[in-house]
Length: 356
Image 1 (cartoon, rainbow, N blue to C red):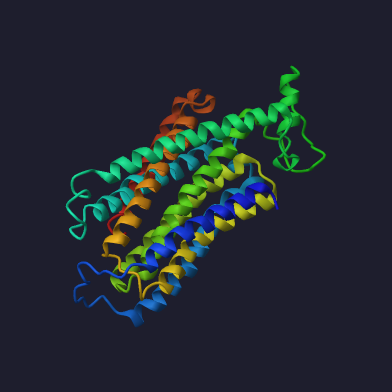
Image 2: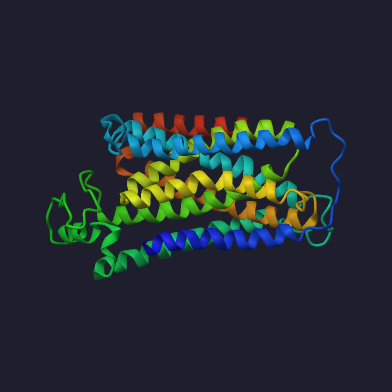
């Protein structure tokens, strides 16, 4: 298994090791849940099982759709339709950060259950989101720089793909690229330049990290809740959200030109994180109190950091990169269609905030 796969799993287990002790240690209950006809543990259980199955299926459909439609000419990365669909998915991701994750963090960190000092005296949500965006930019920039240097020095594992060979062809002054590589891990039929390919790979990895953090947090919240009215609304919203967010991530994975195993692993991690979070929330439902100060602070800060990452990725690496690229800059008509797709995606996700 490649170093990337180990890193991915390491991130998973580190995140879980941070969340579980904090959630398990929650013993203080603040603002106990009011009597509500919607709160029914026995009725909530089958809804949670339905949520796990439905979200898993829609997540898989969303993330795999761009990957399996590669053979359809109209949906290849060079075609205008792919750009429009990617813009729509980027709008979904942008609205997720602004309309879902960030407001949740504001609500949690400004809760009356928290002490006046320092939580009500300092805007922690905005501060953490800002830091998260800056750190994401640093990771984005440094990772791209390091990968580029390794490729130029010929030090990158051949498993990464045929970028070395391709860049060698570019540096050698040839106008063409090789269409085959003896490792069989990279296809250059799309004519993607080596430097662009590196950017696509960094974008795919960082974006998936942000989505995984958000997905586990929202999954735990859903799994720990016994409010059937809330769960019903969340399941519908999450199915919509996961499908189109998956399409955005799937488009990035497709452009990254990974080997089949890496594509499958990235799709798998995306699809299972929310169901895993729901299952974890169900297991912790007896000890997890969503209104306890410790839970509010932990989840609130995680949401703020996730929001900063998602907003940065959507605006900088997805929207700005495409809209300032040669393809969209060369066609005002395509720009207008893409802007409409962004607004449609962001607007649809914003409407979902009513039920989330």
